[in-house]
Image 1 (spheres, rainbow, N blue to C red):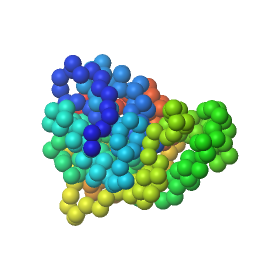
Image 2 (cartoon, helix red, strand yellow):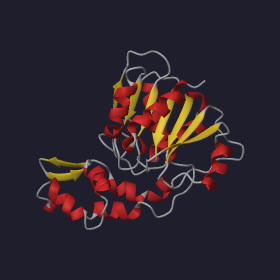
Image 3 (spheres, rainbow, N blue to C red):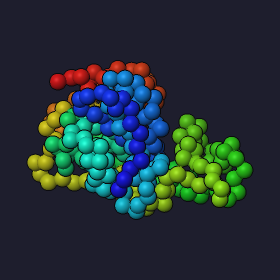
Image 4 (cartoon, one colour):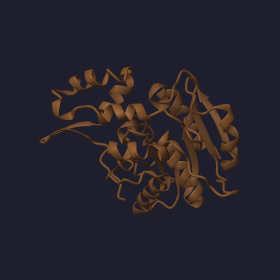
Length: 259
């Protein structure tokens, strides 16, 4: 699948960076970080399938998502990249590193572990799917309706970035139906054969206020990624790079320059 993407700092030599967004996000989420990194690195930021301006498809499995990123790398003549992925994008990056380790120079995984998460997102997706798009007066009206089921204003603002007005009326940019139908796959992580691992450098960056990376996950992390380092960003929840962009960028650049 040909992903929509943006590129920053394409004049820079060296290993390119590929930044991958999370569920219900888009490349827009990374733009502030990407512009900063683009001062020193070549940075490629795609919309993953069923998100943003990329094509839609019912297959939401991580091998499929990883395959799309690999195809983008091939199209851009990128033999090896440093992958940085948040949440669903982190699982996509981990999957690509485990399946094609020679194509990944290093890996930075933001606030997600290679495990299954239960019951976190179904309610949110259901709220978005039941929003009456044909009755919306404006974006403010959409926010008022969504607030009945999604109380967190920051979450609503993030979701409503995906709402688009067209000549035919309001529509979602992302393929909510496929994401809801495939939520079990998105919430899980692929099972790999005994002994499969990625031997390159890996950093897991967790938010201090987030519970997505927990102590009981460390065994699985180190089984698949024996060189894994886990660091914490103070004062950040799951949206680490949005909530603490300065600290996140400093930590990320330190990881990228580490041997």
